[in-house]
Image 1 (cartoon, helix red, strand yellow):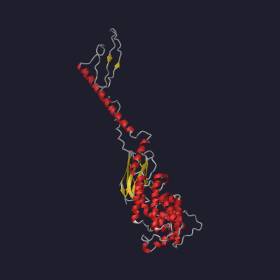
Image 2 (cartoon, helix red, strand yellow):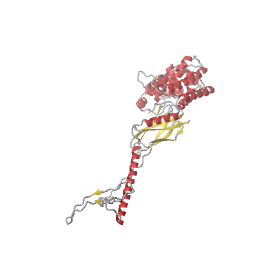
Image 3 (tube, helix red, strand yellow):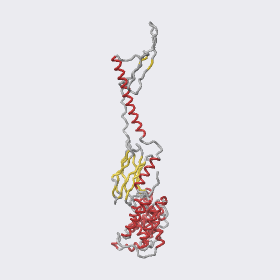
Image 4 (cartoon, helix red, strand yellow):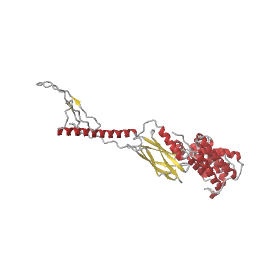
Length: 456
């Protein structure tokens, strides 16, 4: 199977979605407006080079890009006090300045975690890559930063008094949405524990405040120039989606070790055709033999001077040589040859009850996977159908974003006796990336995929 590779189209789409966020990110880390635009462009071009030259090092392109921009901004940051302000959900009550200043007062790691997770809605995996850690540790950093952020705003934090708190789990619960299986136990505990419930409420309040922070976008001209440069460089250095799809299909074809799943049905069909032709040939021979005997034109092969006729059919006549015993009242006679003709009709039914032949197996459907609809907004409920799968097997479906990352949206479905299944899958991408997403399905033996284009 081919390695997961970033295509030119997917990388360009990721840059288009996150360019303004990266600009806002480095501004809040201390870059002046003109320097910030330069950092965004340089780090984006570095992302293209890394994806082309060392793709394994860019397992999570978004997290890698933010980490690279952070490193570049640290070299050129001028300590500007011109924080991005204005607009956003909090502008009506003049809270933007307070939120921005409270965020600036945090240690850099906590500030990065809150910006990426709460303000930019990046996945925990991307936040972890940007922080150089895993997703759980990133959420613990975000949870600690949220508490310190509220303290900077003047909120009174709950006293834990040495009570153990699962901060990463409470940080995830504070974001709302569907509860993961691993967070079910901390959730039940927090519902009955006043201390953990208070920490949970603080996580929720901080998350909502930071989600309303305004993102300072790149100037329009700078943004257009960045996208044009990235698009040109990506097309020159990275494979296109179409070329990568053809390569993967070819590799899967040539790496096939076992016989094709269609070999058995094809051979069975050929056997049926040969059986029919054989039956027709035998019937033709029987018909000719019958006609010869009824008209008296048969040939006695006991006469050594007469040769048997040559039949037009390529199939030989079946014959049995029987030595007739000499009669008792007459001298011994010469050996005669009798021709046994097979009957052109079907064999007579046995004395028992007739048993009907089983109907032929229906032709197997080709292996396929389709989704309906094939495009739409993020979060759309998809109807996924498959044919040609192993009857009675269990198919697992996963929804993957344009960068090859799992989104967490999964479904399983049992295949019916005809090798078909129908199920639903949520096209929910936490990163909200536009472009071609992939629905992957496997039953452990067979694998197929379908696509869903996010256009809004």
